[in-house]
Image (cartoon, rainbow, N blue to C red; front, side):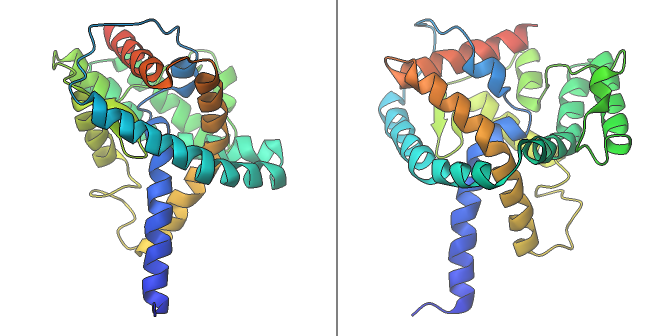
Amino acid sequence: MKTPKSKSCLVGATLLGLVCVHTLSAQGKLSDEDFYNEDVTTSSSIYDPLEAVNRYTFEFNDFVYMNVLQPVVDGYTAITPDPIERGASNFFDNLKYPVRLAGNLLQGRLKGAWVETGRFAINSTMGIGGIMTPADSVNGFEPIKPEDVGQALGAWGIAEGPYLVLPLLGPSNLRDLGGLIGDRSVNPLKEPFSLIDDWNWEWRLALSGTEFIAKSPEIMQRYKQFKGSAIDPYSSMKNGYTQYRRGVIAE
């Protein structure tokens, strides 16, 4: 018989796993709109020695997305007005400013760092903590493509390494996996350098869960569009992700 504490830990672990689904997007690692709308063509230059394992992980992720994440999304969108959905998504995007700032600075993109800083200042004040995005209409501070540590590693000449499909997290490669760890290290809401160290794990989990729910509708919408138009979703995802990442690094 499970104790209340063990039940709480079990629920927490389950939710923590689901939170990982949106990590690539939410931390600025990947722009969903650019990725899922990317023209996909077959590429033989993608190193995928773990294809058998990757395909199995892809199928597992797809099952979780469609059978666990989708019902959550349906419930959230059914009871939440669109303006509140957008405000919640904007709020958590605004909190990822340190990740985007680090990505720009590590590549010497001082103009990008300036724009991200200005947007954060404007949206955090005039936009009530980032719920609204008044910076979008301020000359010189319009939205720019997000930068991340993985892009910086690529700009430094580090090879992408083998293609990977991470459990729940989705497409990646060895270099971007290292970048994801770097993104987390500069994120003020994540371990190991979180600014909310005094919070217990329940509060951290609640915050991550709220972020997960806020970002899920747009992620699932684009994921289903992408999957529905692909003959081989695994290959299309692999090619689309790799082409997108190579493109943003080459810019």
